[in-house]
Image (cartoon, rainbow, N blue to C red; front, side, top):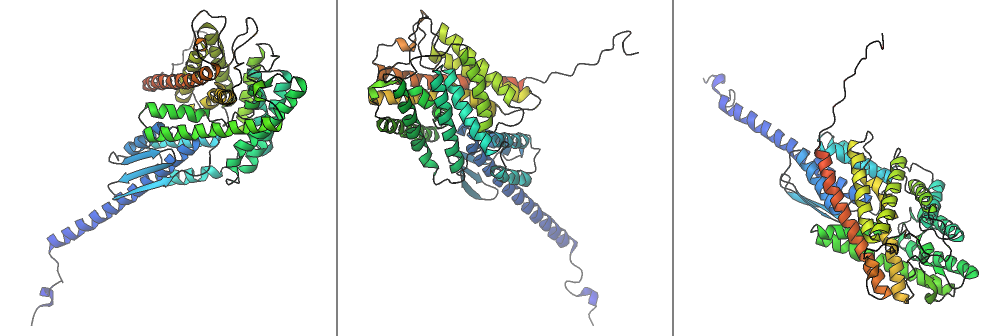
Length: 485
């Protein structure tokens, strides 16, 4: 008889057992690696979509996502970002994925949450599954302020914007009322995305009708476009125009061109609404003017900047602790813009003011205790530089053929807007160009966009140098003789 101990399979070969164990461990390791790769895919796609919804330029989103991939030892990731989509090619999983940008636009407090998650991920200190879940929950986060207070913020921001340009008292009041109306429209359509495309033409039409109708009762010869632009400031794509120029300059042709076309179309829609409102008010386009006939004193502009900052904080739900830095940055940027406009040129002033404000925002982000994101701090400052509103005024004047009344007429009047010439300066300026009024204003508009873009690029380079500087060590406690005994 055969010994049962010699039966096949009863005592497997030790080498075979070791090979089986190694294969099992390798399979488990491969499964873990694949699971980690999928988690990183999900997080990068969701982070990219959140940053696009927050308004980050494509170049910044691409840089952040690649830094996150490196932090988790995945330098082989292929990451491609467009204004409305994020694509990831993962050789480990063996697939490419595309996630489109959502329809939601994040508030500034939500953008701050996205920034905080991105900072942790760039350091490799974040659980990816938890981070993805937090990013998915951000659009549903309740606003910091109730809706009625945010609507009031739009009114304050519009009034502050009008004060910055020192329009008359009635112009400030009309801007506040129209801003309140725009705030109601935006609040109503926020949960109704199908109606959102109607907000720009409806708001432009009704605001221009109200302003021109009221202005006709006071002075039929002056129809101030700047008062119409004040409540529309949040709908004017000035930031998108600058990002488009920035992306084109950095080689992102597809994203830059698409943003540029979308921005131009938005300004055309707003211009059409302004013209329709003027026709309903029975106002001739020949009477369009940039500013009101009677203007407030110069010191009012600095009060307007503070009111504008408060309105922006309420309307866009600035995160806690951001109001004071935003007000300070606004006042600094506005003061720099006024001084440089008076000494050199308003277009150059816009670029210098943008560079200083963004650099200070980066310093606050990297060196401040709360680490407020520079993007959130700089956004209200950017809107105050008004490249978008100047474009609306320029395009309206170009279509209607109305005269350019944006230059200050009173002796010693200091310009307070991009595109306003500094009459008291002997230095040649953009507004000294020997062109007709429409071409001159349009050229100044384009030049201001480029100047702000260059200023932002310089500030970004200087900000990288700040990030590389070592943190200052804590000073040791020094006990003086005779004290503390």
